[in-house]
Length: 163
Image (tube, rainbow, N blue to C red; front, top):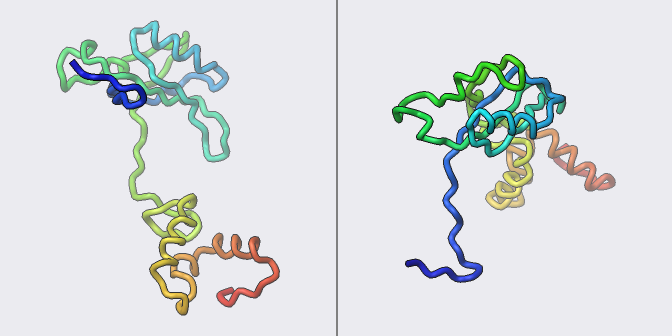
């Protein structure tokens, strides 16, 4: 028997889940209705998200995370039965795997691979520590125009030698 100490309990093991994309349901349908309908079909739903496009407009697609229940599948290599789902909430739906990214992440500011726009400042701070002060800014910051604009906003009255 295992001792349980208050505040030091090991976390419960999470059940494995996988994500699918359900197309064909209008974006105005509440997420709770979709979750309830899938649970009535016999699937254990962890979460339901509406997919947004790059302008934050909801699309008629939903990303659904489902707990894997091996008792629903007869053989271990068999495809999950949710891919055979044709109708949901009186609508004809298509269930697909989510599309994976084809390449490494790319920064939209400096066009370098391996980091994104949100990580630009953290990476630039790491690079500053590597380069001596006499060289000025690291190459990533010299090329990235958004970093230059951020510096201008922070110090509007000082002259920057690298502009």
